[in-house]
Amino acid sequence: MSDFDNSLIRWPGSGSAVTTASVCFGYYLGETGANTGSVGSFEYDCYSAAQWAAKRLGYPIVDLEMIDVNFYACFEEAINEYGAQVNQFNIRSNLLNLQGLNTVQNPNINGLNIKSSGLNTVIKIAKDYGSVIDVGGYVDVKTAAVNLNVDQQIYDLQNLIGNQIESGSRIELRRVFHSVPPAFARIYDPFSMTGMSYSNVLNEMGFAGYSPATQFLMTPIFEDLLRGQAIQFNDMVRKSAYSFEVVNNKVKVFPIPTYPATMYVEYVTEDSLYNSGSMFNSGSNYDIVSDYSNAPYQEVTYHKINAVSRQWIKKYFLALCKETLGRILQKYSTVPIPGGEVTLDGAELRSEATAEKEVLMTQLRENLEATGRSALLDAKANEADKIMETLKKVPLFIYIG
View (tube, rainbow, N blue to C red):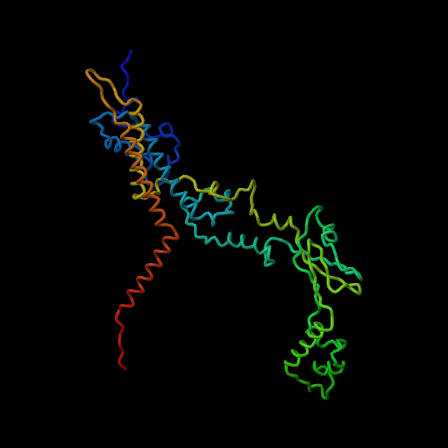
């Protein structure tokens, strides 16, 4: 029987090559870019970080109950956590700009500079409001003619119009065109009973009445205004006012019709109103960004991460190694030895690792917030104010002519 191989449970001083067999996910294996010799950037740093962490944890003075795959898993997790925090911040900052983006055409936008203002989404939302107040939107406003019958004052438009549209669909009235013709449309009407003869109308419009034909009668504009006002007062005092009431799509017209006429109404169907604009789907199976869950931010590209971010990753990696080693050592709090026992520090390592992870996570989130678009704009505005304040104190030249 051969002796037990300690390299299976303790760090032997070096690790195996970083391959798909030694890392859990392999997201960053084989990246093209910055290479060290024939080894990729991730593979090289993963191997080197394991050597560094082992020495930081006390090797070779003390044995470490961890092997290479434990270190490699922690290093990969540190990169994953860093990328997740950056992506979460980017999604929160850019989601308004990304909604509606086709994810088939844009499967991964990690590393792209999102310059959109989000105005396109705001406009789409505004159009929904516009559909309700008739200033645009996605709803087609339809027009229908309603025949007014003699002595009939109430008209059920839901029955009159609803039968012409989708079965069971309810209409919503927008406008009812039932009002007295405007006064200015009748000023030059020779039959409006305003006391103007047909010949006078032609004379005022410059069509005839004088010789030669190049001579015309010019009247001041206030004459037209006074005549229009006279017609309006005549309608108000001597005639029944044109008006209507709408209750549950039933229109009650005033005055009661004394001759057949046509009234026009504008309406929308409630189905089109409530279903329009609520989804901006495009592509098969709705392959668009709708919310936080499907924003196309994938894993970061490791070789593009700068030195500052890699230093954070290494510190977080070391904290994960402490947590893993502490969990291993905490399985047994004490180990009996001849003449006594040894107390293991697993609990202390885990506690220390938790505190370090919290500090690093807080530091990263604060840095992300400080470099966000809103924070940078605030900083730029503050810088501009400081520059203006400084320029005010610069002496001005005095010119003597």
